[in-house]
Length: 103
Image (cartoon, rainbow, N blue to C red):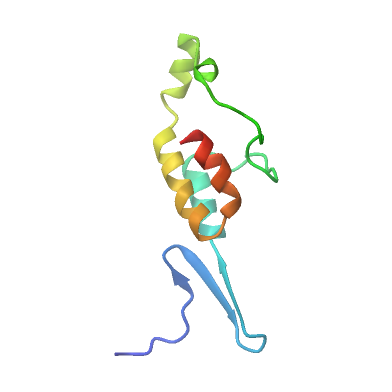
């Protein structure tokens, strides 16, 4: 086995280690920024809680007009919803509630 030195990245996460303080910090900022750029969501509004607490989604929230459907045909909804669980499980547990509601 060969020692390649300190680890810096693992599974899309950047690892920052401070030996003096004895801390280990994981961040997915680069991974998340890359995905936001891929889905053209770079300028999204930041919120503390990504979904209203008592929101109940139903068929009433579905697209109603053909124009709305045409717009949403180009949105990679499944890919976006599939991307977030990885970020959620690893470092952003605050997304769990919203992902449970929309998936």
